[in-house]
Image (cartoon, rainbow, N blue to C red; front, side, top):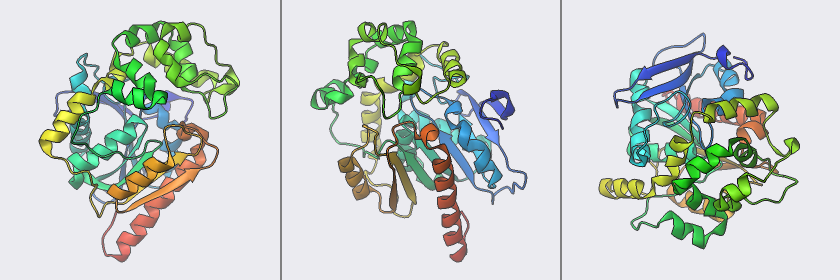
Length: 337
């Protein structure tokens, strides 16, 4: 498993019971014991794919963990429906549960970054009996709400989120596809860019994207990695952007199901974030603690949003150690993780 050689990972493509075809990485440790070896199901965010976990997969497998990493719906080699309603977290969580069913795994540790963090948090509400533990990266937990608030309303209240209103508009698909490399360079900037462009300016669309040039030192990817992402997203941006077009569908589904705002009281939850990540604030973290009884949070000083790359070794070791500590606690309680 070489992070710079995508062919060195164990790729699978399977039809799920939900009817969707998913591509995923499935790495099994040499001493795998069915029903006893923990499985880590990793869920990426936007705009990413299984490749976002390239630096974590091998070290975790070497520590005796089975690691399963899908291309989420709309990404990579997984199905790409056009209808945004297909991308609601209820549908995504059903797909994740179906992946576990396919692999005959009753319970797993779920970990998500960015949109993946939101998705795995909702998985804890839709499928609480399938979880051993939960790890959330970069995006704090936010509970279901009784009242629907449109994305454009949120963007007006919080102008730094106006890019989400742009992504919600259908025009963003073609405009981003026409300026793909520039877009990826803007998105994958590190926490200390030399250019002062705010991501909220993306709402201006091609006026910004066609002119901006982010220098190499500002992005967290090397040339080979950036080239890989360019090739992945040349397949189209409609699927990835559809995640931003699901707010109403998500709200209606959660309201109909009467989902609790609280995560299960016995569920161990770890939240890791970079202190230079503008998507994470102390108030949001404080709010999350109200709904997650067993929440532990860990700050990565001076790191930004792309902590899987920026803090690759720290993330790998911190999560592995946290899981080992949980397993030790479980053994003392005559159970196992």
